[in-house]
Image (cartoon, one colour):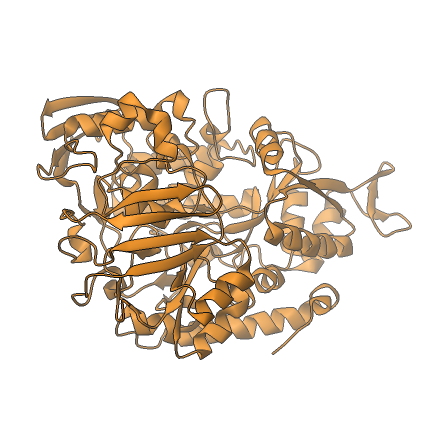
Length: 582
């Protein structure tokens, strides 16, 4: 069914019916049998091999490991929309790191297909009774590509680099903030001491942003990591041209993949040639014509055509953590210091329409605060902020804005109900969503101005709290502690911390629940605490969640062995091989 953009603004019930049908179709398709990931990725619709049951989203365990031995050799030509501009994974929060980090680096631990922690560079570990001391027993057969051995000293140097103020880490430093000190017990035993119990510690160490970099490079020339990184991963960077591309070559002596992947020895591919292609139509056309083999940013507008092409495969998978937000309120600034106004706007923004506008039927609309495939997700609050224009109008009346001016905007003491939405000029999607929200809120009598600024300026203003509301954003993580990262008061940016609490929310009840969750290891208690946190967020409404955070890939049918990383639900290049490697 084809619906014009004009219908999005003028006929909201039609859009809700269309999107509801698409979501129903997505969930129905998701129940199909998947067999192997190469076929399932194409056959199972917008969710790939995902299955929704009782409000929870899950994927086949077999999606996360190698199914058959591949054929060595060949060059994979891949495209992606954006350059990270640095390979120092400790220094950025860029989404590309989810898969890019696995090409160059290895992690200390790895999540298994159920989300439990399993070995990688650490063979085993013990946690003290008080939850503050972690003792890691490391592999003794791993080296970095510069010949430096991986050992306890390497772990110590990496953890220090993550939290070093000079690294300016917006993510890794926050994830290991409770890390207090490290002690080298012997060459292959490392002891990490935390300032407080922190149950997500092992989970965050499994993420790509916390991969192990050569300690020699960190000590001797940390600036070189940006363009000449040295890791212990299955590929080595051969060349890099900013904003154009990067070439990676196989490390022939690699033999320490995570056991969960069931892959032995080096990667199958000889080379990966990655090109940065911002234009969606070019990423699609180059894949269709055979000029490229794989795109890590499959355009959702071409998803139907890709599925219909027998020579192509398509996969869309939901990332764990926090869903995509259309707007984040600065709760310290009027009018968003009034929770009734925040709730009214959340109820008055049609997330079905926004999901369609950005995802062309490929995104699942979302009105709560935790991704449906995240551990301890509670679907009880899935509809707490669902589209409800009459209730939105009632709340704005209750908040003291019943009058309207000649243009239909609400007034209080002669002042119009208005705010400015700050967005970056680097995201066309944010601009289109902003215009859609502007139209929705205009019907409520709310005057939303859109302020588009360069990315650097938007970042500076975000850190300074100089805005009324921010557009766009998602925060993927492999643990529900993502709620702490985004909404705990300790996550507000300070001169010493690059924080992610852009709503600048300070709520004692929520803080207490999220802190207790960090201290607990009991699954029943964690479910109860994270359920309380999810409920509280629907009461506080610091942001407007819009749709699940999807990662979409597409590739040619001769690309085999695609399986996915357990933490990020992004493709692993370890097991990929080419059926025809000419």
